[in-house]
Length: 283
Image 1: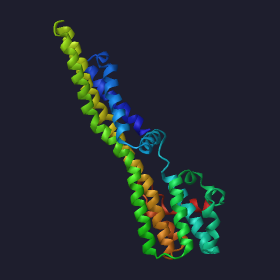
Image 2 (image 1 turned 135 degrees about the vertical axis):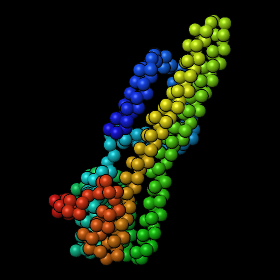
Image 3 (image 1 turned 45 degrees about the vertical axis):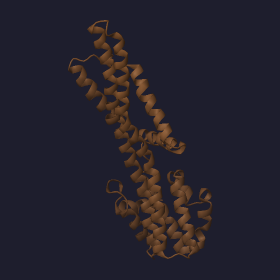
Image 4 (image 1 turned 180 degrees about the horizontal axis):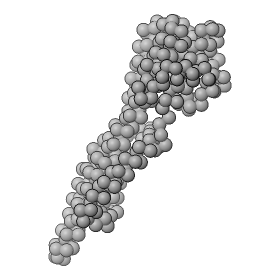
């Protein structure tokens, strides 16, 4: 929603100001300039990035339009699920959660949290380290170090699409200049046709520079920043899981373990202590 609202503000401000200043919107409609700029941008994007990054970029943009799943409700479900796992392990023994870990799709605990089940990478992160805990052969600091290394690698993966989009944003003003130069080359053919014809051709050429700069700084660049924020919220889920698991391995009770996880969440999406407690009891 914010992506759409922000785009409307950018369009209304720039084009509205242009019209109020006496500009003609039809002069800005230059399909060939758009073809040159965006065709070259898409082509360079495909050249520069592996296929999985291209797919992640489009998936990330779709998530921006539909809304990130990593909100307060998601985090409360995550902490509630961890509480159930820790509580079962504490009461029935570590071996009691092996079936849940090996088959989360059929687990009574995991299946109650469909939002978490959709996050395949995070689910694998949780089950992998619960499996390591059930083996019982790793010191707490070793487990924490391993988790931090994986989170660092995951951070790089999550931020890669945003970096790819940001590089296209940086390239768009240059591609706009390319379109403008080609327009000036075409203008040279009209030198004998009078100032009016030359003026229209030069205006069309300058539209290319305008579009490249406007799209780069007004839309594509901000989109990459929005994707970075979305990646950070997803990464916080991993840090939440790490803090909770390390706490439970250190001997903390399930209620205290998820409190460690809750404190790792961003303040704007962090549930309150009593709010989380009520949610856990309701589940």
